Image (cartoon, rainbow, N blue to C red; front, side, top):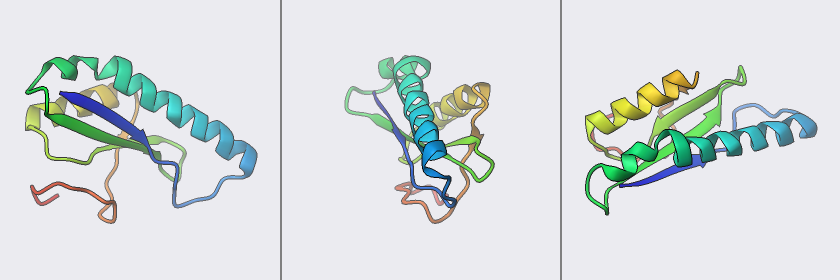
Length: 105
């Protein structure tokens, strides 16, 4: 399974330039760590052509939020939720995001 974690820098709020630079770097590092370390176990699950895509961003309180944006088995999404929850990330609940799920989310 291919694991892709993408930092989404566009937020509903606009921090000043200095803070935005720090936040963007922190988000980039969090995405890399999530993809390369924390979700590495998923690489060995499913078929080689399966994939999971996770978006990371900030909410208005500067907390990192996450969302799986493609169709994956429930156990994969549960694993991502457990890992992200353990890291202190919150679920990203927004209807306007470009989400490719067919499960009616």
